[in-house]
Structure formats: C-alpha cells, structure tokens
Length: 344
Length: 260
Image (tube, rainbow over all chains, first blue to last red; front, side, top):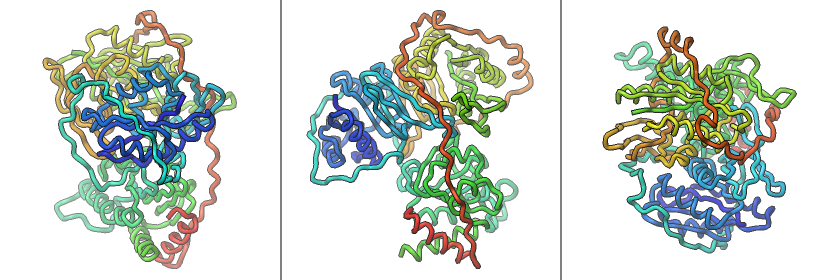
C-alpha cells in the first residue's frame, strides 16, 4: 500500500523540511511500486496537501478540524492512528522535528508498529526497511531494521535532499474528520508566546557559534558589574554585537557550546552538542570554541567547518576545513565586513 | 501522591565511544554516569514529590549496569529504586521497553506523574516516553521547560513547553507523562548522607512475570553498529598580512566551496 508522509505545518504553512520527507517517500514508493500520500492536519491543510503534490505526493488526506489548529499530541495522534488503521500504509514517514518524533512514536505504539528514528540512510530489502542512524550522540552509527506491516520512520532534518517542486503538479485531496471531539482532549493550550525572527538551529543551512572565548570581549563591562557578572555581560555583549551581525549577513542561526550556556552567556536553546541540538548545516563557523568531544558530537555532521580560535592547538582545528588562528573579536567583525562587501 | 522517573547508566559525555572488532559498542574502562538528560528529571521528581509531600520512585530497565544510575538517584534523594529486567527481552526495541515500563508503573499503582529526561544519550531515541504515555493512556507533555502548577485534587497539571517557534502554556489532566528539558532546574549534587544511603541500598529486581506482563515480539532489530567514516579533511589554516586579508581569503574559499 501507499507510502504516507506527514507534513508538519505551523500557522497554516508547511515546514519546508517536510519536503525532505516527501522526497524520501518518493524514493521508497518507487522502490515498492506504489505512490505517495501526504497527511496534513490543521489550518489550511487542504492547500498544503495540494502543495505536497508539487513535491511528488499524488494524494493527500487532510483535516482542517478546529481541534487540530494548534499541534496538540492527543488529537493528532488519534487521527494519525485512525488513518493508519483504515489504510494500512506500508510506511509512514516524517521529518524528525520535536512534533514529528512524538507523533510518529505515539502512533507506532498505538498500532504496534516498528519505528526507526533519526534515519540518515534508508534501504529496502523485500518487506524489511533498514535505517542507518547516529547513536551515542553521533559517536557511532547503528543500523536498525523493521518488517512490521506499517513501518514508521523519522528522518533527520537536512540528511536527505528536498525534491525540486513541479509547480504544475498537485495532489488529489480527500478530507477526513477529526477522531477526538474537543471535550475528549485532555490537554488545552492556554497561551502561546511566539519567538519570531529567530532561525532554528536544526533547519539552518549556516550556523555561527560562540563558545567560552566569548568572555574575552575587549569591551569594558559597566562599572557596576564585577567578577562573574562582568564576564557574563561581556560575553552576552559579544553574542549580540559580534556573532549576531555575522549571522545576520549570512542568514544563519546562532549556536553555542555547553561551556558558554552553563556559564550563563546565552540561553540553552542555542546549545549545540551532546545535551543540546545535533546539527548538520552546510557551513558551521565555530568562534572561540575549543571543540570538546561533547560539542563535536553535535556538529561533526556539518559539511564545511570553519574554526576561529586563539589557541592553535584547540581540537576544533582537527575537524575544520578552514581555520584562522586569532582573536574572534578581531576576526569575526572583519569577516562580517568582508562578506558584506562580497555580497553587496 | 507518587512521582515516578526513569534513568539509565550511560558512558560519560566526555568518553570516546567506538565499535570494537566484535561489533560491540565500547567506551573502554571509562565509568558510566547517570544519563545526563535524566539529571533534570531526577531533580524535578525530587522537587515535585517534596512540594506535594508525596512519594517518589526511580526505575531503570535493563542489565545490572543500570544499578549505578539508580544508586546515584538514591544519593540525590529519591527514596525508592527498582530495576526491571527480563532475560531475552529485546530492550533495544522501544515497544518492548515501554511495555515493561508501563507494567512497572501499573504495578506501583498509585502513580500520578511520570517524569522523563528528554532522551537517553546512548541510543538517542527520543521515543520511549511517548510510547509509555500511549500504552498507559495518559496525557503526554513533552519538552517541558517549567512545571507551573500541579493540582492533585483537581487532577490537573500546568506546564510551559518549549516549541521550535516559541513557548506554549498547557493545562492537562493527570495522570500525565512529562519530558523535561535542560534548564528546568539545577540538578543537586548528592550529599554525604545520600551517598551513604545509596551505598547500603539493595535494589529490587522485577521481571516481566512480577509485573504480570508478557514481553511482546520485538518490532525492530539492531542489525549492526559501525564506526563513523573517517572525516577526510585537510585543514587549511588561513594566513595573511592583516586580519582583513585573512577574512577576505576565507570568504573567497567559502564561495569556492559553494556553501554561500
């Protein structure tokens, strides 16, 4: 049966990383001799379902029920499970965002199906799907397989190419009802505070990261700040006035090492590494980061790594394609200027 | 009122991990630690149980190795620890794991809240907590950055959740399964009394038959572990007469690499 792919949406728009999952679904479907069905729930689902056709889905099953407008696991999982039980797809695939992971894991539990997560390579042999995924925070790889009737797969973002859209194609859209009524849902959203304008680390094609070296900011802290407080002030000032401008020129996300997060220089959501985010951008610029093994685990999948560090012996240079030995507070502003000149 | 959390022993984050000639994952003789994500779950369990004047239990599923993490949890201040193990059960399969975890929660019987760390850094599968919640039929609240309020009389929990696009406040019905993020608290260090208590603790081991569950057939299997391909990199250290010259050369290289 068909290969199903869940398209993540937020406020009525598709998460573009979901097209990577459609690309994977296309490959699996052509090997299995079947077609691709997109699943879209929530606001504007019909239009996004039709849009999935541009990337290769021939059908879409959608629901715009009001209970599905914000992602809440229970109504989403109940609906996905119902669709899987009604249609017995051979595969359900999604990109492994927070929501993709919890939705597919839940539905796999409901239907007693095998779940392969964080896939970076996939292969099919008869009724078996095999995935290669990172384990031990990316220090080793593991191959896992499943042969259950429906196989649930989440792929790592940016590990598979996004298909080029064919703007004249569209998917056949079928509408379905939600499974849970509003009063059967045990979780209610009270409020939502949006953080607009920030680029998500996991989606970013380019990341500029700062580490412990951010503390060596030559700018003086205000006179009423001393000791650790002054150090934190300097580091924060550096992220805002040295790292962020480079990130802005590149359209990049801002990352950080655990050392910088633990020292209070920058909030946790920026942490790259073993207990932060695992990222694989095209370009990773590490500024003032020594490259502890925990940090390497989070970023060694990056295509090109650039290291800027005062210490020529820092382990980060062993991973880097390009390195500049020197003070990040001199080099990063010069790099920002050089890029502005080149890109203007 | 009873809060339950799960933990496991994992190699230290600074450990080198590789696949040996027999195809097994090894980290040499480096000691294991409490799975780093679980430290936040353990601390939150202690806080929640204390706030409500209730009981708390930590559970590990798997081989004796995990007793180390359980003892560390006792040392931090969780009074009860249990290890669940079943010979022959494929614990790499998250549905097998979740079935045993669900069985243990049901056997305890009076549990209101289960708190998980985000994931385990060994297998790195952020999926067990969701599957436990589904098997229990409980509410699932993931990526929680703050537990705002738990009302055990009204049976509700109010939390702040981190989304990729911002922060959400959710109210849900108990019993619930929660996964917590780094930053929700500052995990405590065990004190001397805690360490002494842990060293004397005898940890009960429950099997599937103690839980009254049948171990299901595994839905997935681990085919092999592999070492990472060597990163074939020649590092070019960019030199130049001035900082500006170095920056300009780097920009040229990045354009040649087509990453800009």
